[in-house]
Each structure stands twice: as C-alpha cells, then as structure tokens.
Image (cartoon, rainbow, N blue to C red; front, side, top):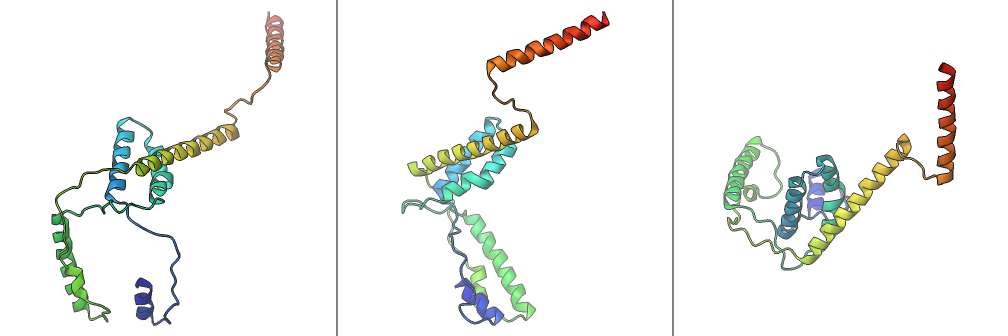
Length: 187
C-alpha cells in the first residue's frame, strides 16, 4: 500500500517500487518487558555500559526479533494521555498541511483520529521462548565480544603464545646468564 501511494505521488508506473523484504516489526509487550528487565539487571550489576550498548545494537534485540510472536502476546500499550496528545498534534498538522495548499492524497482527518489508549498495563507474562532467545543472544554477544577482545590482544602483542616449559626454562637461564654477566662486568 505504501509503495503504491508513493508511486502515485511521484507519477511512477505501478509496480516500480518493490519491498526490500524482511519484516520490520515492533517488539511485543512481553518482549519489551523481557528486554527492559534484562537491561535493568545488567546495568544494576555495574556491567560495562559500552559493551551493553554494543550488545543491544547488534545481537540481543535482533535475536529476540527473529522469533514469531504467539497469539497471546500483545503490542506495547499506548497510555490514554499519549493517544490524546497525538490526536491534538495530528489535528494541528492536518490544519497546517491543508492551509499550505499542497496536493493532498488521502484523508487528512486520519491524522487527528483519537484511537484507543489504555492506562492499564497487562501482566508481563513472558513466554519461555523469549527468555531462551534472550539468554542465547547474551551468550552470542559475549562470545562475539570475547573473540574481538582476544583478536585485539593477540594483534597488539599483549597475549603470550603457549610455549613448552623446556623453552621457558632455557630462556630464563639465558636471561639469567646475560644479567649475571652485566653485574660481574660492572663490579
């Protein structure tokens, strides 16, 4: 529907614009509550905020969004006061658009519709698969962060490569002799 509207507005032949694929859905109330609880626990525990931000952007939210919500899950409720305020702003925007003299496709009245809001918050019954996916996401993010840190440490030379004990003993003896030689020359 959105593509067809833009095609009409731009004077393009129907079918010119195609969907890029992939779903861009919002979190359900249950998913949002699970993530909110995770974020609160993570930050209350004093964990690294930069790692948290990186995990939130790249892994945690994406893994939760990969799942298909069940029929029992509900959208995040919009409070009644927010619905009323949105209708006021929409009415003002509609009046400004109408006064501008631009060509209008569609009904500006929908901008000021007063939808239903609710000040009641449903219980955040989190389905087990959300908790499981959230745990998996945290594990994946941790593994990814650990791999990045290890690669950085190796490339910077901060990590010792594993060596046989015999090689370490030989190196210690060599360094000890060299230091002893310096001490004896000074003395």
